[in-house]
Length: 400
Ligand SMILES: Cc1cc2nc3c(=O)[nH]c(=O)nc-3n(C[C@H](O)[C@H](O)[C@H](O)COP(=O)(O)OP(=O)(O)OC[C@H]3O[C@@H](n4cnc5c(N)ncnc54)[C@H](O)[C@@H]3O)c2cc1C
Image 1 (cartoon, rainbow, N blue to C red):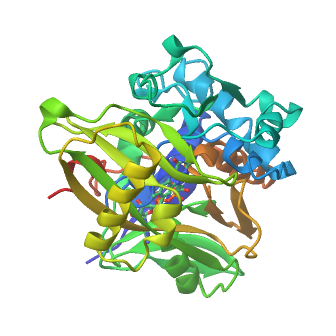
Image 2: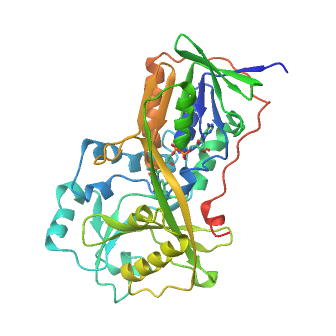
Image 3: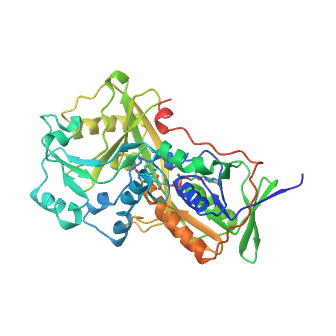
């Protein structure tokens, strides 16, 4: 069979949030970019995320306000501009689950902690919710005697984010086979094209790897051993009321223990049939790796009783979800708080490291491509590969 040749300006491999944001921006700028996905759009980390547009407050709680955490602090306002239709990408149709997250402790905070929260470093990021009428129902209970703060960080419904990012350029987001690995055509250290299934050749000026965990195999297939990737495994916990008439209240909140590090983060998500799922991350998910689902749900039940002692839980159905975070290898002490991009000639290896940092990833790649004088060419529509579709939300598949 003769090989079909396609051309584009930039090939992006992997349609999670990193690849989608970049793809959308490049095409909006008048370049032609093809985004290749071997599974479903968002199906790996992105649709497993809690949808929090972090501004770094969680890290500032540890008292460490690094330059990097200052970089992430601009992300909520950047996303908010997009949500109002005034930013670099129109996300005005995205479903905003919450405009603020909460942070609560079931007991009053120590005076040291109160003054730390009121300090200059934190007061612009979080405000105490003093008035009862400003509190969600769950925290209006007379037995709740603890502290409640509001963080200026929105929580988004990720399937609707994916839809807004993918739809305008859907015909340039292509489903490729997951069985046949991509192979590379190289000349003098530059990649000139990729081959799919030996049937299709795609030529481009630049190639960007945004395949999350899949970047590792792609780098191997290129014979490149740096940057090194690391995985951070998690086992997340999900629960919902068995009877949806008694659905859990929707909350978006970090629970603060005796230390400054949140012990659990709960976000709420709606199933197709209108029930509410609590999606629980934080320490419990980090420490849940290697535990059986039964062990972890028993621990999660105890945890909910402990952090919300005044709240009578309805009868619950439970599920757990194993997933790896993929990012460049870090030293044990540092956390990635900016997007990561490393270029090797015309190959650019990228991890956003957080969903919230997808705009930062796109900035960094675009800056690099412009430095290398990316040109907008004329390219034909691709009819020979199907469009990739968006993966199913976790809330509608985890309990099956
Ligand atoms: C449980 C959990 C909760 C999180 N919560 C938050 C949060 O609330 N806020 C936040 O900011 N961040 C959060 N994160 C981090 C965030 O989800 C990730 O940093 C981000 O989604 C990574 O996006 P990505 O595009 O790099 O990768 P992914 O979303 O993993 O996407 C990679 C894509 O590449 C595809 N792919 C892989 N190999 C190939 C190949 N060879 N060819 C073609 N396609 C390929 C995959 O199928 C996938 O679709 C969370 C992460 C986890 C795991």
